[in-house]
Length: 141
Image (tube, rainbow, N blue to C red; front, side, top):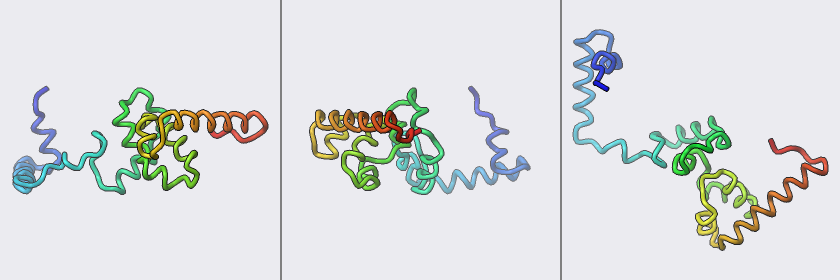
């Protein structure tokens, strides 16, 4: 693929001469500045905290089974955020696991418990949820 100069300059102005000048100024401002790539989060998102929060809320993690784990992590709460959001430790662990952004080993390390304990908690929470739905509880969907 070749560089589409007119397309690129179109972002800097409607008049080609003005666009070239604006592009030169844009490049000059960036020379010597820190790379914006340093601020990419989870190999996917480039933006401030407000942008990341907006991006997370606009996406459904359940629809991302084909997306690499590193990219899913960008949409999921961090383990610390998950722990803060859910007062019950087991609920926080189950939600972190359900996000599919973290392995059970990562969750275990964060909560300072064993992998096996994480597995038991997730199994217990799944059992409680299915039992709740079966006896007339509300469907979590």
